[in-house]
Amino acid sequence: MNAQPYKLIIDTDPGVDDAVCLIYALTDERAQTLLLTTVVGNIPIDTATRNTLHVLDILGKDIPVAQGYATALHRISETAEFIHQKEGLGGYIPPKTTTRKIIKTDAVEAMYDLLKKGDGDIIPVVLGPQTNIGALLKKHPDIIPKIPKIAFMGGSPFGMEGYPDHISFNISCDPEAFQIVLDSKIPLLMLPSDVGRRKAHLDEEYVNVLKEVNDVGKLMYYMYGRYWEPGYPDKRVATNDVCAFFALVYPELFTTKKCEITVNVDDAPGKTIVEFCEDGHVDLVTEVDRAGFIRLLNDNLKKLDHIKIKF
Image (tube, rainbow, N blue to C red; front, side):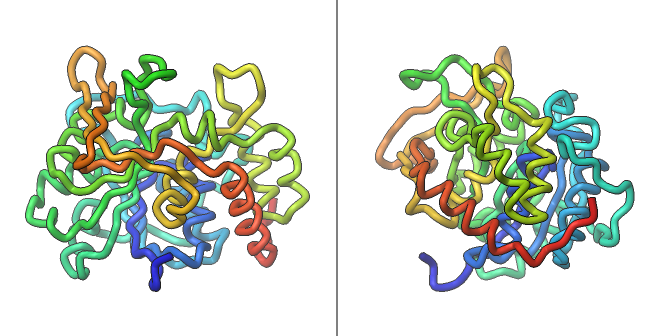
């Protein structure tokens, strides 16, 4: 464990999984989130920003929020409201207005200003499409040496035994932005979508128990109630974004393997191809200690008994 908490920028598009990740990330003793930035992805940018501010209202946290890109860099990408629902938080309907407000600086400039003033120890955690971080690196390449690592959720490495030819949502939304991130050669921690869907998912029994834990658990229960992962024979909830955060701050629970990643920006936009190599600049998460992960979720949720929510 780090002697000091990880200093983070969290770039997000809440989205059910993002909102749950924010709850865990903003209340975890191993993390200090200095800035939140929003991006179009799961839902349109204004809804994503509102949901981010609403999570801060619920938690009673005051962290700067900067709004980012409303579209991908070079294409129009579809949102995923079919699974996150129109308001973005599944079966939970948030208020239309929030107490907390965004800052005047946009996401790219807010990230740049913070990273430039930092000591090279601030890690961006990208939970949605790579648009904001790609735009940052393209506009301000001088900031690359100040970024020690980028942790992100996305990608379904093509060509690995046991995995189908699959394109992940986050990367396919803006593969050109991801190409910029790859070209920067900044060390990457990549949480592919199969980990949260197949290895660290929550089953229906777990979700049903959440409503009995505390108000935050009840909130998750409501959100998850309309967020079941499609395409599986059982009812399950994917924990992709939560895994991306925990893989960074609780590395003892995850197994990684070094590789290089290439991304298709042409005929199959967003397809990621992995090549394992000892000197790769990408740490790809391949396994998770499921029992330890669930125990961590339970322990951290129980610490939030003091938070009261009006439903």
